[in-house]
Image 1: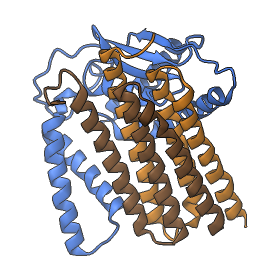
Image 2 (image 1 turned 180 degrees about the vertical axis):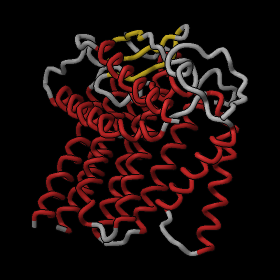
Image 3 (image 1 turned 180 degrees about the horizontal axis):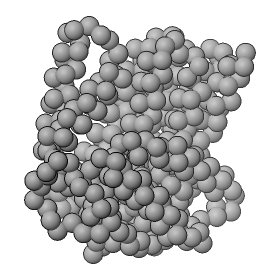
Image 4 (image 1 turned 135 degrees about the vertical axis):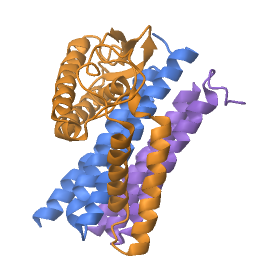
Amino acid sequence: MLLDLWTIVLVSMGVVFFLAGTVGLLRFPDALSRLHALTKADNLGLGLVVIGLLPRLTGIADGAKMIFVWLLVMLSGACLAQLVAHLIRQSGDFKP
Amino acid sequence: MTEFLLGSACAILVVVAVGLVRLLRGPGEADRMMAVQLLGTGSTAVMLIFGAVIRQPAVIDVALIVALLSAFAGLAFVRGISPNSGGGDE
Amino acid sequence: MPSSNGKPEMTGGMASTGKLPSRKAAAIARGISYLALWLIMMPSARPTDLLVGAGAAIAATWLSLRTFPPATGCLHFVSMAALMPHFIWQSVRAGFDIARRVFDPRLPIQPGFVACPLGFPEGLARNTFATITSLIPGTVPCGEVDGVLTYHCLDLRNPVVQQLWAEERLMARALIAGRRHD
């Protein structure tokens, strides 16, 4: 029961952070600010979902793989954020 | 518990789909691409939740592939439209 | 061990304090890391699976040595792993920071650019720093101007540069400590 509660709380928080990412993507006024919302809120949302699901898995190997998926998304998000930020600056379609 | 997990998976899908409004509105290429990245992260999370619901660890592999593909999609986008890469033909 | 890398012009920061590993040492370390990654993704002890994994690890090592030669810098995995909890905590703070601003009806942001001069030399060290600092609250690195990293920050009212310098001190110390240990 306690583990169920753990899952419910953390996965719900994950959904809230996905919502934050979307709201930021829609509300923020310029492309670079939207990039902040995308990279930060979403990674945390996925991380919370992963941590929330961990007690429901059958083996340690699955848990390690799940955490690896999260780290991969975090790393690729961080690298892509830099590349996109560079691109936005270069192309100049932002309002300072 | 199954209902809760399926419900949150649907919630994430809906939230991400709303984010795709950015894909329609733009205005920049980068904005559209960010909406697609959001879709990538969201569908990774949805896959992981599905894997827990149907108790099928192989779905984690699907999530891994989704994450990889969205990373490569983003890289391809950046290379495709960056002016000094020499690889863009659009 | 003698290192025969041909990049003597790296100055300042962490590169001057430690010796870069030789090509062979780097290859072995990377190969073991890739094999470990394979085992996380494919946890099976059957000989055929392990054979495929070893082949994949060798291919990945060869590719990584071609794209990131050891002379461009190296990371000390143990000290990076020791900093992992800090990075994850920063990432959590960043997420809460975004959520707080996004759900506020007044949308309290004041975006702008900040130049942040750093002691890290160009190459893997600076790239790693930039990648990791893109996870801390309110900053996204967006390229270099004359060798100085430029950050876009969400709120110029925050002491962004001081925060980044604190991260730099933290990471430089960990990396130097790692070097001495080598």
